[in-house]
Image 1 (cartoon, each protein chain N blue to C red):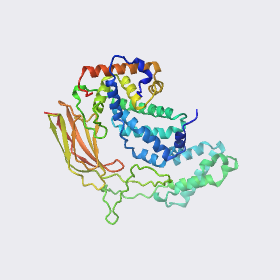
Image 2: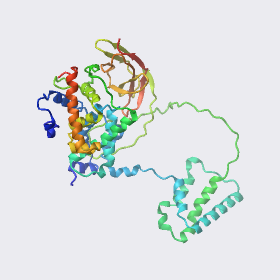
Image 3: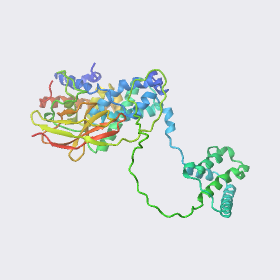
Length: 292
Length: 180
C-alpha cells in the first residue's frame, strides 16, 4: 500500500507511477540502518530509565544558597540573635587567639553546617524556642573560626607540571559499554569516571583525486592507540564548514569518496575513537581539489 | 484515550519495551534526518530519543500517536539543526550526483532510486514539500499527523504533498540522471 493512497485521487491518471515508486523505494532504502545510539541513550536503553527518574537531574542547591534561604526564613528576632551570636563568636575567637583552621580536605565547616542546620527541615522547627537553640550558634561559630586569617607565609612560585602517569599504578581505562540487547534480568550500572584520552597524532592520511570516474580515494595507517575502537573519515569544505561523516569502520583503512564533485575543494580528516566516542587519535588534514 | 501497552511498559521503565520502540522507530528517524540533510543523523536520532525518554511521562495515546509524537520531536530537532547551520538543506543538481557509495544504505535494485539521488531530488524541492513526502513515506504518517508535526493545517499539508509529487515527476522527466 502506498503511503499516498489516501490521496490517490490527486495523482494524474495518465502519468506512470514509476517515478514515485522508485523514489519511495529509495527513501525506504535510506531507513534500513540502525543508528548508533549515543552513550547517554545507550545507557537509557540499557537501564530503561523513565521520565520519573529524571527528577534527580535537578542540580543540588549549594550550601551558600541553603544558608541564605535559611536566614531568609528566620524572623527579625532570630536575625538579631544571629548577629549577636556572630559578634560573640568573633570576640571569643579574638580573645582565645589563633585557631587552627581546618584543612580544606576535611570540610569541617560544611559538615558542621549540614549537621547542625538541617535546612530542609526548617519549616518543622519554626517555633520561637527553636530560634534560640544552640544549633544555630554552632553553625555561626564554625563560620567565625574559618574566617581567622592565617599567619603570613612567604610567597612561593610553583610551576604546573605536565601530567605523568605513575609508574607503580598504571592507569586503567574503563570504557563505556556498547549498546547490547538487554535480557530480562535487572542490571546494575556502576558509574565509572573515564579519564579523557590522550589524543595521538599518529595517523597519516593520504588522499588522491580521480578524474574518471570522479572520486577521491583516501587511505591511512593504523593508529597505535590501545583504546582504538573505530575510525571516522570526515570531510568538510576547505573553510571548515559543512562537516560530513563519510565512513565509519573498525579496521578498514581506505575509502573511495564518490560523493565529491568536480571543481570543488575538500578537506579530509580521519579520527580514531574509542567505545564512548572520545577521540583517541587524529590524522593530518588533506585538502583535495576535485578532480583533475 | 488509553495508552498503548508497549508505551505504557516503557513509561514504567521497562528496558525491553524501550528497545522494542527504539528498534522499530530509530531507522526511520535516522533516515529522515539523513535525507533531509542533517549534519549528523545518528546524533540527532539519539537526541530525539533522549527527549522521548525524558518526556514520555506526558504522552497519552496509541502506538500510531506515539510514532507521530516521536516525529514531532525529530522534526523540531531538524529545524534546530537547520537553524544552527544557518542555511537550508543541501541542494545539488542531479547531473552532479553520481551513484554514491554509502555502503550501509545503498541498494542494488534497479528500480530503487539511489539514496544520493533521493537526497538530490529532495534538495531541489521546496523544503516543506520534501519534508511532507519523507514523513509520509518514512514515518507512515497520515496527512493529519504530518500537519501536527509541521504545525500546519491538513489542507496545507495536502497541497504540499501534491506539489511535491508533481515536482518529483517534473524533475525526473527533465533530467535523466536518475536510473529508473
